[in-house]
Image (tube, rainbow, N blue to C red):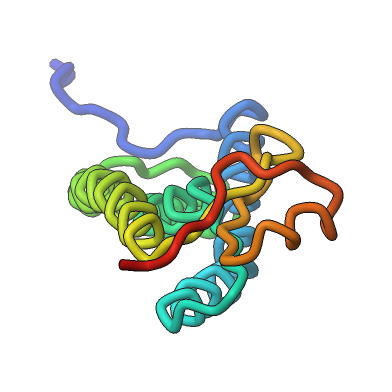
Length: 159
């Protein structure tokens, strides 16, 4: 009599699973490449220079780093062994998803707080060239014209 309750944990991997893991590896690689420059941009911005380039999307890219790291490790495991052992990564993936959700909430709060502080310091803004381009916060309205855009909100004195 055979035991039918035995579940096979690892099986062969389909092309769809390999492609999705390759996509996760690409996202992780992009995060590793751009994270240092994004973080250094924010550190410089806290010195309040005359022009601050701020992109809200970058904070969300940093927020998904924990989950993309776990997916990258899963991709490596899948590439090396050729088998998908999701059960091995399930608990780690759940915790990384929780951390990512928390970091996304922090990113929303950071975006709101940072732009509010810039407004309090008297920065104006230029029109964005596209939906995904950075927002330029300026202290002099002539900077927008130098860059070929119009002034969206004029700068004012700080206090």
